[in-house]
Image (cartoon, rainbow, N blue to C red):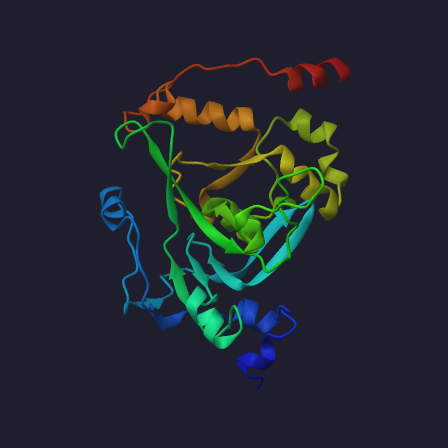
Length: 272
């Protein structure tokens, strides 16, 4: 039987089928700092404390993280993502990286809490939260240049990292667009020739859609809570759930008849 080191070639950063499909967490959370613990508690989010035993929850499964950029799926074997929206990192803390001379190892595990970011408001009463994750890409993604001459990179780009919403990472890993038809007007799918489009074509089309939380709770990142739709429909669904006001996300959900004009659909109708 192959060892874990043989299953995943660390030197060449090559993904391995066995490591992808047979991964089951069973480790104690290492020492680390947990930011915003009180805020997380106030909005109903747990945090992993140092020493906590981390295992799979009932029904939870894990895959190596997938990111989509420029129509390409990029495998990130130093991160595992569950269908329940949890992320485990195999990347060492910066001090350990310097001491060991390597950035990650499949035998190192840490459950990531994610970073909380406010949206739609200036205080806790009038704003909601999004969960972001620091996603190391080890140079697999294109640099982020701050000038036209491509000589100045952002600080995160130099570190070969990206901040990405956890729901985007979960959706790319567990809810790929080529296996799940976007929830849009069928006429749009017809105009895009969705039924005959290849996997590569659909990955390029992904930029036309947004990941929407079906229950309008941005902290519920179960893969079954996602759909892909247009940005306008995503916004409309949020407005309906919040009573016609994005700042009212804590209020009682009511039905609001919001039917914005859709120029794209009008264009399709004119060509049909």
